[in-house]
Amino acid sequence: MVAIRVIREDGADPSVPLPSYESAGAAGADVRANLPEGGAITLQPGERALVPTGLRIEIPQGFEVQVRPRSGLALKHGITLLNTPGTIDSDYRGPLGVIVINAGQDPFEITHGERIAQLVVAPVVQATFDFAEVLTETDRGADGFGSTGRG
Image (cartoon, rainbow, N blue to C red; front, side, top):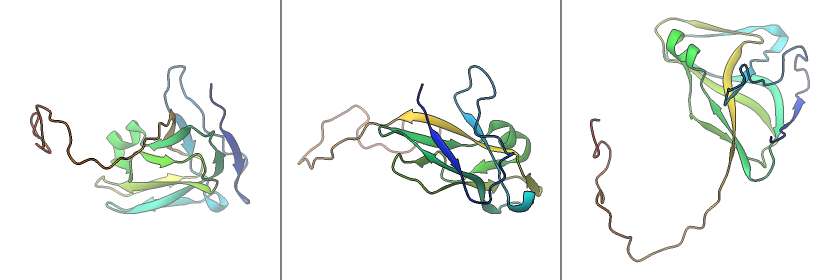
């Protein structure tokens, strides 16, 4: 188990729960909107917004937190996240915000305390990038997008 330290932003509503796993097998912990004065944000179709969570987190070195969409919001309302999955690096200590977009056809209201995304803690492997004169050959070679099937 990895411990993620959490503090609240000044002015954040302390009654909004911390991120939590909603089932025993959940990979992602749901994070909630923490809106000023308990308000709401209405997203028109195609509109995006940075939704505050009221939190700052401390991630142990060697890990990241990925911010991912919630499948129910995506399927039922077309609500998803830009920059998906978003990465929060272990050395970041600023406010945790979620970039939400309405890809649906109807306006969508994000309410105070609503679950808006999920956080997945994952290990990070850093690599070295070494210049080479040539790369090894493979069966695929340089074939690009859609080269291994439909799409």
